Image (cartoon, rainbow, N blue to C red; front, side, top):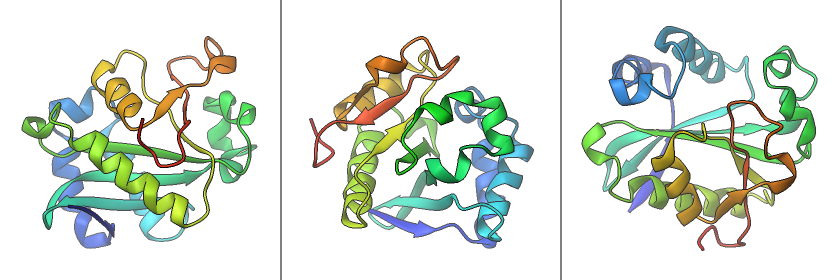
Length: 172
């Protein structure tokens, strides 16, 4: 069973440890910068909502939901101009699995499906995810969870593959 709990300041050392792992470093930015971004979320300076996801009550990774409209026109959008190509009412999701031994075992797909279910319950209808297209494991997991490439944006988003949930339940 997958569950989610909000990240607290007490989680930051654990997240720092996770972010230093090679499989995180490969796809995420500088761990110190990323941790500062999460600290901003926890302390209310960023509207992105961060969570620890758990399987069977055990911390297994990190997931966040961010609000497209809050990012459009921001200083953040200067580096990610494709944000202005998305509908303002959409939400974006990012996730990473804590331990490399848990990668490629379906945990990412199951987590994303459970999270999408919660987002749907909260009324979010447009859900996107933006992996690096070279992260084939992530792209495969996201497809299994019901996400598909946004055809109109292919080739227009730099190092990001914009995908949108196409099924109502979050499963294909």
